Length: 508
Image (cartoon, rainbow, N blue to C red; front, side, top):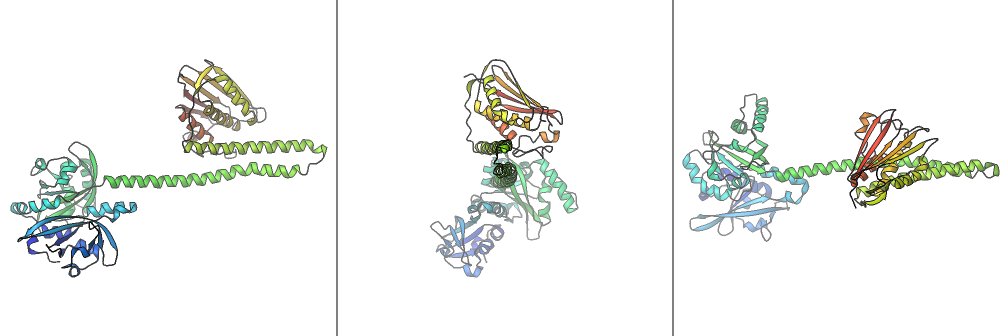
């Protein structure tokens, strides 16, 4: 579309035609005199279709918040404006920004990429050309929320827009004519980029201004992400486009660098990655939960079913011993099911943050002996649990949480020991800490498995044929953590394992 003669200031037509922001020139009567290619592309109209039309036929809403497209769609936009004088009439320049991506989180990256496509080449070949356009450019730059820096061919800064002042912390007078575009860059990134460009282009690219402009000189797309360094030394990510400014003879007279702060985009990307990782983790845990639960429930339920069926067959007095044997099997299976359910319930409460720590002054020996008495049913064959205590009789701790910790540790120790094994339980009380040790002489834990012991659903590679949910040690670690304690493990395959739990015991 032809731009009105009064708007043909040096540099404006280049900016008008290449901006990735919609621009409308509107006369005093509100009629569109010109629309740039970006605006026409968004709206789907041709230049002839919009020229002379009232602006309100295309921009709708109380604050012109919608662009009516030719295909009937309404594109959400943000409109800002500035004015200029043509003869004795005031005219308006409207800057139209597509903000549709702000309404959809999934398109957040596209918004940043669209914004960074602002490649407005400013034609200025001589000092006088820069001076003639500076005031007009400044009126435009104040509406841009992007760093806009114009340099001479050797890299010295000639123009530094208000957004650059705000984002980088340098007053314009401090960098104009003396500063360089490279002073805002991390030199290591410039060196890395120069190496990559040398390989890509097949020519030597020097780190520094050359690595920022070589593609612009060759008329190649030149968009990259960089780390910018503010005057105070803080850093932020920028999507930077550097383009060459050429005169009518295609000689380079300077460069224009347009940078968009992409901190918000990086944050959105990180949050999206975290959400995807969390979703993957939950899917894995769900699959493992279903697999383990179905496997662990199947064996005791099968025992209950088969024993119940056989009980119906044993009806005589002579069958009484057989009946008692199957009743014990059923009781054992029910006990196992209860343990499995307790593990899952404990895990649920931990994940939901429903566990509260209630420390109280407690007789340590009596409390531990009571827990061990309740665990008698876990023994097999001639297994023994030997308990000893040292130090003051009373300590301050949460007896209920310690019950879960000790029960799981003793259960594992008995489960992974032979039928004549001995499990040693020891407590040591000091004024500031209670130490609990559970040691067995069982099958032990392989070194490569020990780093994963406290993960949910993890089971060692040498316990595949032994029932378990893989939750016991995870629950131990979580309950110990709630009591602000620590748990450590020392184990050797075929020699046994010792778990040591340290719990701080504040005075009540």
